[in-house]
Every structure is written in structure tokens, then in C-alpha cells.
Image (cartoon, rainbow, N blue to C red):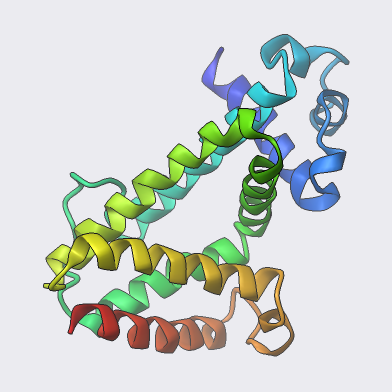
Length: 202
């Protein structure tokens, strides 16, 4: 499949998921969103399973691009920026997370929709493997920061970040936290992440 067609279809599917939920994700809905002839999406993704897997792959690719842009490790072997200082590390992470809450909001909501769908449909649980990369990234970052047990701490950091994102987008935190995309939100995230990172690196 041409890369531009893959991006067009999966980006449309991400928007459908974010705005209409998993029940709204159909091949026809993606066709309508892209303005392409009916049947285009099903020609490339024959089943719902393959469509969801493609969406998760696209989300993972975009997330990696954000991590590289933010100078965070995009995979376990990536060179890590000078993130040995906790305050610097927290500020860099806060910028990335703020982006996932604002300009990347639809992508984050679509990610959670896909993960929740996998709890009910074992045939798509293969998408959980994409989470392995984020844990490898976190371990590499914490190892560079001198964490005494980066393997365990990396897994715990990912869990904390996921919880923070979910709370801000779908939980009660959305009612009291600063608006995403603002300096106030980035400062608030920096404070939260500083506390978390200190706990994992001392």
C-alpha cells in the first residue's frame, strides 16, 4: 500500500474513533471521512481487525515521531538527549504529553478506544505488542538518568504516564487541570512528572 494512502485512511479512522467511538468505526465511515469512493477502505483493510491493527500502527508511528522531536528516545537503541537532570527530563516529557492532550488529542483517545476494544476481543490483542516499545523507551531514558532499577522503573513510569493522560482526557482531572496546549498545563505536568521521576531515580 502506498504510504500516503495508508496515512490518509488511518488518520481518518483515528478521527472517527475519537469523535464517534469504536461503534462508529466502520469502513464506510472512513470512506466518508476521506471523501474517497465507497469500498476504498475495505479494499485495503479487508476486516475490522486489520483496520484496527493499522490504526494502532499509525498511532505508534506518530508517537515515535513526537518522541524524536521532543528529544526523548524513540526506541531502546535511540541516542538519548542529555536528560540526566530530572527537571529537564520532566519538562521535555511535559511538552510531549501536552501535545498528546492538545494537537494529538484525537490520537490519544483513539489509542484508548483500541486498547479497550482489545479487552473484549482476544483476536485483536496483538495490538498490545505496540506497548513494548514505550516500555523499552522508558527503560532507556531512566537508565541514562541513573535509576537503580531501570527495567522495573521504566514499566512503572509508562503506567503512570498512561494514567495521567487518561485522567486529563477522560477522567475527573479534565475538570480541574489547566487547559491542554497552554503554558499552565505544561508547568502543571512538569510538576507532576518531576515528582514521579524523583521517585524512580532515587
